[in-house]
Image (cartoon, rainbow over all chains, first blue to last red; front, side, top):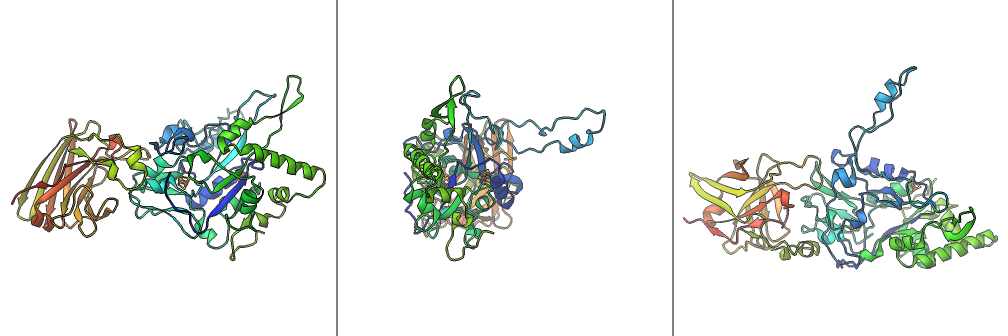
Length: 342
Length: 176
Ligand code: SF4
Ligand code: SF4
C-alpha cells in the first residue's frame, strides 16, 4: 500500500446514487470548466456511467494498478480508440440541410466510426425485462485518495496531496508525461494530454473550494445528490453520512487507497415473478453492490430501508431529510467563506 | 547496454510493476565521439524495429528518445543520474522534436529540462530498422573537463520513458 500520511484535513464528497438521473449536467459542468484544450477532448474528470456496464474507460476496473488485495500491479494506459473512445462530432449540418419536404432525412450520426465513448453503454443495464431488468448511474471523479496510487507512481514527485484539504494535484510544470500515474490509478482518473504531453486530473475545483464554493459538478447537479465538506466536520453533511449514519461507502475499497468520495448505494424496486407479482428481492443484486462498495452494503441498505420506513410512518428522520436535500445549503459545508446556495 | 535498474526508480509503483523488466530493450548501441575545433560530434546508432516519431493524439504511445550525459564533477554517479551537489548534464533528443532539450539532474527523479546550449543540435535518421543520431555539441566544457560520457535510449514501441530505458553500463571514457 502507498505510504502517504493522512493530511491535516480532508475534503470529501458523498453522492447519493438513489437520486442520480444520469443527466450528465455534472459531466458537462466539469468539462466546460476544466477540459476544453485540444488534447483533452476525450478526458472527463467527471463522468457518469451506467451500471451494470463497462464504464469509462471501457472495463476500467480490469485495467490494473492494484490487485484485489490492494497490492501494486502493472496497470495499463487505456487506448484512445478502444477504451476511452475518441471524441466525435455529429452530422448536425447534414441533418439540418436535408430535412426539407420530400427528401429523406438522414440519421444523426457521429463523424468517423467511434468504437467507445464516455457514455457508450448508457441505460443498457442488465437483467431480463420486465421481471428483473435494472440499471443505475454511477458518477465518478478522482477520489482524492488518502493513499493516492497516482502520487506513489510518479518518479518525479510531480503529484502532491495538499495538507490543508487533501486535494491531490498534478504539478504540470514538473510532469514529464511518463503516464505511470495513469497506469497506476485503478480508478483511471488521471488523463494524459498528448498535445501538451502532461497528465491532468480533477482538482476538486480547488479555486472554488478556496472561496467556499462547492465544485461545479456538485453545484450544478439538479438531483441535489452531492454533498461536499470536510471529513472531520461533525456538523457537516460528510461526517453525518459517513460516520454518524454510516450510509456512505467508498468505491472499490479493496484497492486500499482510502477514497474520499463516498456513495450512498442504490436501493431498487423488487423483482417480479412470472405472474408480475413483486418478489421482495431487489432488482439490483445486493452482491453486485457488494462487489462495488464492499460488505457494508448490507447494513447500509438496511439503514436506508428503516429510515425510509420511519418517514412513511410520519416519524422524523434527519438522515432522510438530509438525503432528500430539502435545504440544499445543508449539502455543503465549506468553512468560513462558504457561500449560500441560492 | 543494460536495462536501467527499475528497482532504483523513485515511488512505489515502477519498481513493483516493472520488476521483471530486467533485459535491455536496446541491448547494443554503437557510438563514436570526436572533437572538431570546439564541437563535440557524437554519433549513436541502435536497432529499432518500429520507430515512434510522434504521438498524434494517441495517449498510450511513447516516443523514441536518446540522451547523452556527462558528469559535472569527477565522482558524479551515473546510474542514479547524479546525486545532490553532483550533477549530470547533457542533451536529450526526442524523435518528435527538432531541437535538442538540455537536461540536468542531481539524482533520480530530479531531471530538469530546459533549452539546450546555443548551437547544440542533432540530426537523426531512421533507416532499415536503425536509428542514426549525430549530435553536434559546441562548447561542452563539462565534457572537455571530464572526458566521460553515458547514454540512455528509450524505445517508444516498448513503452520506454522515464526509468524504462537502456543505458550504458557506466561512464564511458573518451580519452584525451
Ligand atoms: S482516484 Fe486515482 S487519480 Fe485520484 S487520488 Fe486516487 S489514485 Fe490518484
Ligand atoms: S448532475 Fe447530478 S443527477 Fe445529473 S448525472 Fe450528475 S450526479 Fe447525476
